[in-house]
Length: 259
Ligand SMILES: NC(=O)c1ccc[n+]([C@@H]2O[C@H](COP(=O)([O-])OP(=O)(O)OC[C@H]3O[C@@H](n4cnc5c(N)ncnc54)[C@H](OP(=O)(O)O)[C@@H]3O)[C@@H](O)[C@H]2O)c1
Image 1: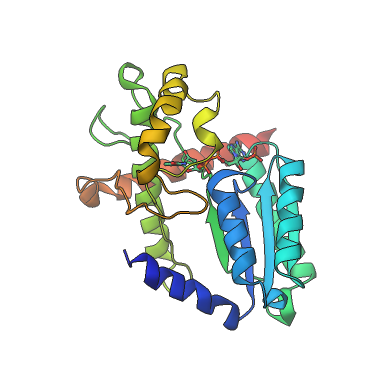
Image 2: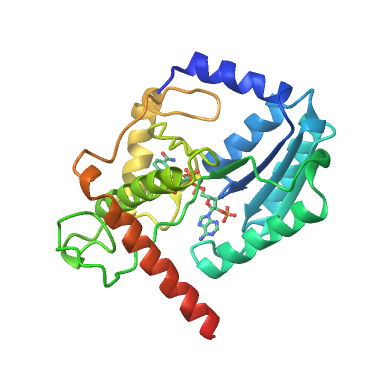
């Protein structure tokens, strides 16, 4: 991974390049919202080169961010697309169609309809079981076994599947799409207080946060050096992630079209 200085220098060059169409999911708060603010500040003097789709559930938080974006980067084009649950493939499909339609109706800066950057803060992992035969505990694909189901196992499965699924997509569409998996370590934000976390984590976080604060990336301070949840054991079997994910996704598509 390049160092922060190199990354910042690359980002600073963006507004002088071709106009960009960016879509962000899971961006109304936390890491996604920090990205939105950074994009707005980066294009502060080049708003005419920027169109942003913010895809999210919470309309009032999204409107606050859109206001920040428009004021910080005058002339930029900010659009909010509301969803109710992006863990449903039907919603992912319909939001994709909406972006395609908006781009086809009014392509940005006269260019072709396109999406230059898709930033997925909250991204789906197809964690359903499928008929694709994988021995229990052989590879972290599908749903973690009930005996070991928990925050850490789900995280391992999600990271494993996302990494190898995206690698396969990048290979299949080489030259047309590239993926970057960003892991800045722990990032301060509201997620640690969310009631989707177990109670012990919410309590522990309140106690540990002051001690950990020097190791946490925050909105103002970037300290994370990267952390890795995927070892080497997946490489030779990565086609299984693709097979599993496609089987799950095709199954969902069939179910949805039969409704
Ligand atoms: N923060 C960390 O240290 C850390 C570390 C490792 C991994 N991560 C992962 O990185 C991702 C982002 O973290 P974060 O700290 O930015 O979390 P966050 O503050 O909780 O933000 C999550 C965002 O995802 C949206 N979202 C959640 N569930 C959704 C759903 N079902 N459909 C549509 N939108 C949904 C929320 O939307 P609304 O606000 O509109 O409801 C919110 O904007 C999470 O997947 C987290 O597990 C975070």
